[in-house]
Each structure stands twice: as C-alpha cells, then as structure tokens.
Image 1 (tube, one colour):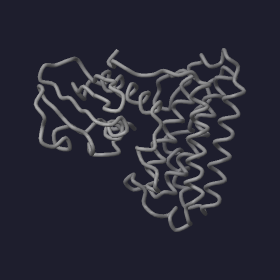
Image 2 (cartoon, rainbow, N blue to C red):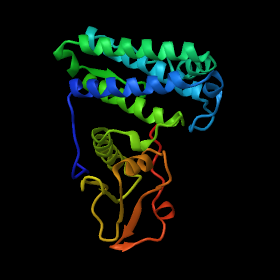
Image 3 (cartoon, helix red, strand yellow):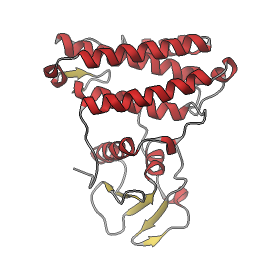
Image 4 (cartoon, rainbow, N blue to C red):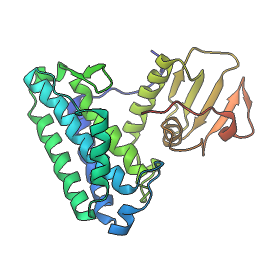
Length: 254
C-alpha cells in the first residue's frame, strides 16, 4: 500500500454519488448554448462537444462491461480504439439539445443496469480495452471519475473546488497507489490541508518532496488539471519558492 489515508466505498455508495454528480453535469450541459458547445474545452484538441460525446460513449462502454458481468460472457467495451475515437468525433458536432438528450439517456441506461445487477455479478472481472481485467464493482467509481474530471474539462463554471470530499479522498488514494505501482513518479508525500490526511507516492525518502494544500488542489494537480496552483512544496523540511516549478508533472491518466 502506498497511501496512509483514504476511502474505499461499495458500488451502492458510489452509485449514489454518481447520481448526484450526473445531475450536476446535466445541469451544466443543459445550460450551454449551441455556440458554447462548439467552443474549446480544457482538453487539447477537443471542443466541449467532444467532451460530451466522450461521456456518452463512455457510459455505453461501461454498460457493455456490466452486460458482460450479467451474462458471464466477454463483451468488448469498445469495438476498437479507432471505433471509439470515430464515435467521439462523430458525436462532437451534434446540436446541444441532442448532446444533452444522449448524455441523459446513456447515463440512465448505465444506472439502470448497475442497479439491476445481481450481487454475485459484481465480482465478475471485466476485460478492459487495454487488455487487463477489473472488477465490475469498480464500474460506478470509474464512471464517477469520468463525470467529475470531464465536468471540470468543460470549462463551464465547475471546477475542482466543487468536487465532494469523499471523491477527492478516494481519488487521491487511487492515484497515489497507481503512481507508486507505475514507478515513474515520486517519491512525493501529499498532505491534505483540509483533512490532515497523508498519501504517499513511492517509498519514504529523507530528501523527498512534500506537496501540501487543499485536497481539491492536490487532486487537480495529480490528475493533470492544474500546474500545482494552490500547493506548497517542501524538500527535506525546507519550503521551496514555487510549487509550480518544484513539483514534477504527474504521468498522464489516459
């Protein structure tokens, strides 16, 4: 384990959080004008329409995963990487009303399938498009992260400060574990100034970096959605002049 604090929730708890996050996303999406949907998002090369289209098709991909869990037979999340990208591009230019209708319908389909899943099916190991397997019980949390991160990427008034504390804690735990296992990043000790929780990436080191600040600011940096704004960095107990230059760029999440 590479973290010293964190939270792990049940699918039912994650589904409740997902319902709330999806409702917030839909309110933002439905407030966008057609021109605003066509404007750039925070993701390089993607408009807001691309982000919305991706969220629609991601819901369908995860639904395919739950179908595999229900039936016991592998169902590809996407037909192929090329097909995934083509579907996102094809949906990006749709009228705003069509985007929102698809976003709501795809989210509803996924939520209905999750709530209908038999308890034993949550143990099924779904085949990811990158070739590894993951538990069906992870699907609600995976979708929650897609919704919360990409809601920020819409650049439409919803920022990291809107993330729920439970989401922030769970994601800091997950990313600290992931980056430790990856081995390309760290060692860094993360201190959440809001809660006092600590999350460690890599093995402890006397001269290792410490990044401290509000939980949402830590997560925005780790997820590639800020350049360490709002954080303070120390090395060997000494405060460094600028966290934005002292802290390394985290590995991409994609």
